[in-house]
Length: 132
Ligand code: CTP
Image (cartoon, rainbow, N blue to C red; front, side, top):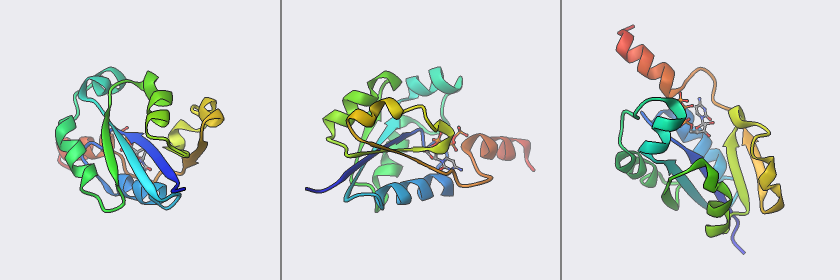
């Protein structure tokens, strides 16, 4: 049976930290499914509209070689449904979420990967808008 890995994120202003987490997630199995968070979800979660729309973010993530399937994550409350719908064997999250998804270890393996240091969408936006 192929091993399916699932991960979630906004992936706005796509950067190398996003690429690295996707590559490392893919290496944990045979098939990688990525949930890209909806614009409305982002507004609720981060208090701002993403720079790129969900359709654009979805298209960028879908075009990556390690990614087999993408979908729009409509709600944070639906993680268990998504894990089951895509028959995921492994849930991968960045370690900024460490411990927060352990409740799903009854249906899949839960892995937290260390974030790539010194880069984030928020920092990039600040750097670009600050002009430094
Ligand atoms: N990620 C990572 N290393 C980074 C930044 C993000 O491994 N330097 C991972 C996150 O842990 C998550 C995925 O990439 O698993 C998507 O994260 P996202 O929140 O979309 O990116 P951030 O750059 O963290 O965005 P923000 O600054 O808006 O929080």
